[in-house]
Length: 309
Image (cartoon, rainbow, N blue to C red; front, side, top):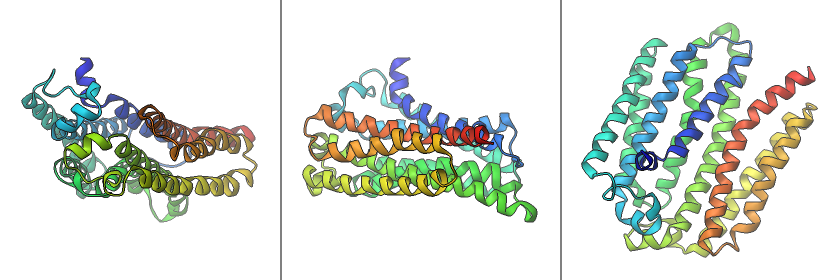
């Protein structure tokens, strides 16, 4: 069982499920707005995206067996504990379940064309693993984009179908909040992928991959990571000032400073001096925690609004 959990990258799946559950039950359900999906249907939506992500993790592991054997042998299970044929069957099974649920939910909200989104996610994850990963920065952008789509899909299935002329303004505000968090997700996930490339430079180079860290060198790639890390710092500071501090939501403002801005500043300070693989791994984990704590901030904000009220 442990090997199968490693294969599907269960930690990432838990974060994905947490993201979608916190935004539904810690945000949207607490608002006085109509939602298109029932609770059990929303859980199906979570299951669908988790299955698609699991399928993506499996097919990625299939195509990068050689690099995994050098970069992270502790995570390599295909060829050691699970056969490649079994892995392909698991990939097909997870992807089929994810896309099938997507078709069902698209018809539930009377938007059958939305089913294309699930096919697009599955196809993108497959082509990323099979060919796009070798294109400089393209793979990083694709993974960051797919992770942000997992958040936007909430608005597409739960908000958009319930939007009509009388509530467009209110629903638009809630959708814009999802977009803000999706942008945050994109930037942090892009950083995570970039740091992962820096961490895996030796193994990727031996396999003939063309990541940014290989093309321009790890030293310059760290500088790129530093510059990119400044973007969310200034964006979050602006967001905290305008939407939280000025609105006297001080608890949310303090939470954002301590658990999002300060860790980002810590990453920015440490990234250039990080040479040891353990240091790079540490910063990689820091970014993942920033992502989780960023998602949790929506619940903190909602509770802070209710407490102030």
